[in-house]
Amino acid sequence: MIISPNGFTEEKKYIFDLISEFTGSEFKIEFQESQAYKFILPNGKTIIIDDRFFGALEENNSYLNKDFIPKEIQYLSNDYAENLPILFGDESYSEVENEISLGFDIMASIFFMVSRWEEVVTKERDDHGRFSGNLSLAVNNKFIKRPVVDEYITLIKKLIGKLDPCVTFKQHKPEVLITSDIDSFAKFNSGKTLKMFAGHLLKRFSPALFFTDLFQLTGKRIFGKKDPYDTFDRIFNIAEKFKTKPIFFILSAPEGPYNDGWFAAATYERTRIFKSLSDKGAALGLHYGYFSLLNRDNIRSEKFELEKKYGIPIKKGRAHFLQFDVMNSFDILKQSGISEDFTLGYSRHAGFRCGTGRAFKPWDFNRKCAHEIIERPLIVMDTTLFGHNKMSKTQIKAELKYYLDISKKYNTDLTILIHNSSPKFVFEAIEEV
Image 1 (tube, rainbow, N blue to C red):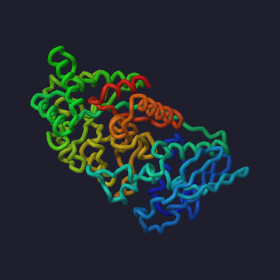
Image 2 (image 1 turned 120 degrees about the vertical axis):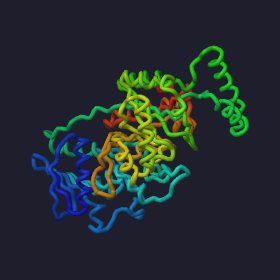
Image 3 (image 1 turned 45 degrees about the horizontal axis):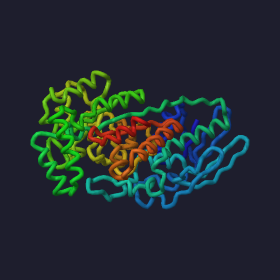
Image 4 (image 1 turned 120 degrees about the horizontal axis):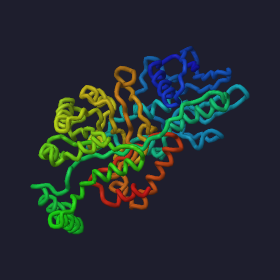
């Protein structure tokens, strides 16, 4: 049983529901006048967690204020936690025979990470309209690579197990989800190849890239080699290595700035590979176009064209350029027929934007409840590693191994994005991990 302080009851119910889902244990919740959360265990022993954040606010005051983002981060280290970031409260801890008390407000810390309210109160956006990872508390305090929500819940489970070993939890089996964004179907397209070669010399000033692509084009035209972007079967095989099936997010938006437009120009016969992969167990999803995330009609139209071409219902999606607005995007996706989104990661930083890799229902700031849509956060994107961070094959392997180990340690899921257009050494790195 959990006795919770009054005030902000909807937010607290949301937190308790998430803890219940992640632990696999049901908790009866009772609200009372109190200054702390109390986990009363079946044997009568108690865990007390101070209500340091919501308890300091008046009921009619909003926490949606940039001034409430933590200015300093403390860390908790003891027998049950390893240098654990404390977002609200302090590191005070006491333990007696029948009771454990913490000054660390775990509930508010979980809510901060999962709800993403820092993105609502931080108005700055980058050139693509995104909340930048460089503005986030996790990046600036160097815990972005830690699934802190899973760590917080692990701490709760350890404390419960310490006081009442008879309490059992349902063990979550972590998944490695291999996904691919199909921004372009082929590297060498009729009518665009000459423009690409001119760009290598006149825009990118890269003779090396010019001759590399010329060699690949020659191999395709003269020796019948596959287009460099034809890596779909390879992605399928990588997913099977992790005992799963891949998800291909297809960009079906019309041609325009940052939208290749390949889908409308490609015949079903040319792109039937996606139907074949779907028949083998792969999932197809929509890659929302660059100007579509805040436009329900655009997403509906793109989704309709994708479903029409392959005759498959489309329920999954991810935003192009990882554009997202946590205040409005979930409603638009739901209204567009998308029930599972895979967008929430940062383009320049691998890691846990939401503090977890597990699927969850996002917080609805307008209705003060959980959205009826599932978010599966993106943890590692290939272009983050080799593009933005200039990692070598060896470094990419080490990075992927780190996240695979973290996934196993905290039983959190790991969603990986591999573009079909990625360089050969990226594919080799993940295959060798």
